[in-house]
Image 1 (cartoon, rainbow, N blue to C red):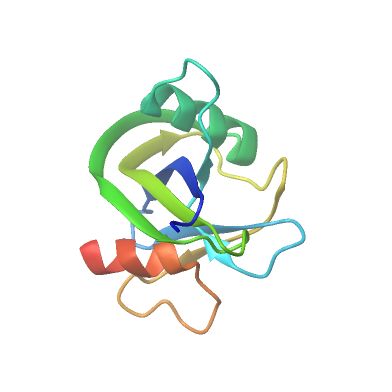
Image 2: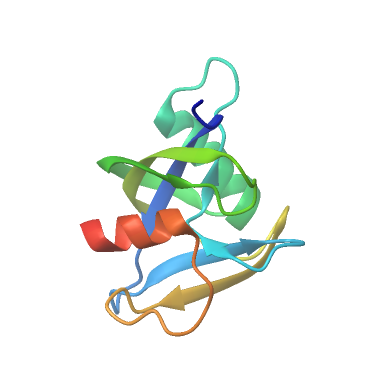
Length: 127
């Protein structure tokens, strides 16, 4: 039997130094890319723009598909997460909002000792 799948859209956001933004949702210990689930009728880019505004207060100005990736879900045991992941450019001040409790800029070659979601490891390998 296959595991239930959670379909999401996520963003790879990098700063001028090339670091990548990762976020941790309230009540969890694992960092992941910003993004989330599509609302009914939303395409990927519309959903991504909405999620970035809600979670980080920034505006999506460009999104290029990096790829579609799959891995075990970080916070939903027994589920698989399938993500359309975009290289995203944003404007405005990026700040913690909504269900996001913490954000960190990581070096993609050496992310350090923070706990990253399994999907993050797959995407880092693709970068």
